Image 1: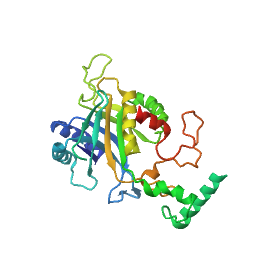
Image 2: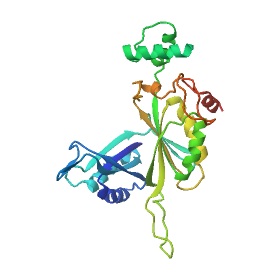
Image 3: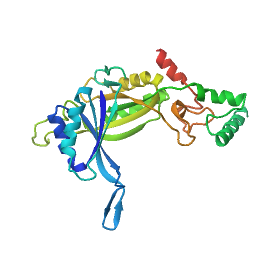
Image 4: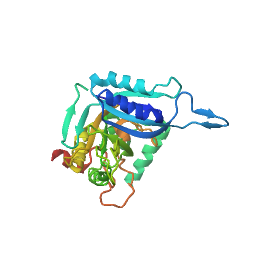
Length: 109
Length: 187
């Protein structure tokens, strides 16, 4: 199991969710975040913004689905401009469904 | 005032030598022992629960002395794809995302099971949307105030009075495994 943290443009969030759904990945958690990348923010006229609003999506998928998920996010979030965002992938050792209390273990952590 | 002496010793040594480098014998060595000899694995426990269950969860976890957490309001959906419903008078159509509370605890390896049992206990209603818990590996932690690393960054410091007057609040909690948690693990 892997945790994908995708930081995308707020206006692409809907498209990303739909693309993931089309790839069979329905469950996700999203949160509004502020961030900046290597551009150190953006200059608009005289004002400089170093905190740009983004949406962070948290998705936990099986190892076999990671590539499909990344491809779906990439396809939907990509504009080719700076600020399209990042996807971070980290391991998940165990997951519990609270409703049933059932534990899903990953292979050797 | 033995305790105060220790505080002073420890603080002096940290400022002069940096943490973990004390060579002084006796009391000071005893203080620094857990620092050097207890490398523990850290885990992040990430729970996404119903917003209204966050209060009870917090209360329950205070009894485990696991009150340190970071939480945020998030939106999410599971396999139910939010709420599916027919639009009609007074009801809107589907709700794509439901408000949830996401909480992250950073704990030592041996506390993970007790924490998860407690979360399940409070949040399990047997209905769709109860949420998920994920356990993630974590490499290190740093307490910014002191520069302590690993498990030491998480442990309550014995000489530090913990603010708060609630009976649940840990008062001078000993380092290492708190008593309440020991009972929980054994039970």
